[in-house]
Length: 127
Image (cartoon, rainbow, N blue to C red):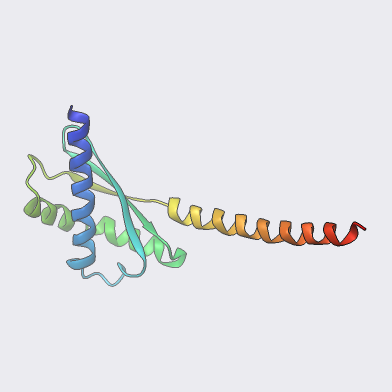
């Protein structure tokens, strides 16, 4: 059942990278509302994709650049804090799923409001 092992390691890497970014990284570009949504660690534990969601559009590009430049520091801190065979090489990827979900929720709310207005107009027209 190595599938479960990789999932557990991925979740532990996600938690620890999130903690390292929030508590130990002192780059001013890494600020605002962000979330480390998931981590995908390869089976050989050599590489990990870290998905980061930044809710503020104007800070997304700067934060991703800061994280890519700090990848070595985060990798070293990760290797010191969790016990696995290899400290994986980290690749930070912008995850826009949360922002997309917020956009869809807004569109649905707007559609529901306009539908409510349309239904009220139709009900007032019927005798």
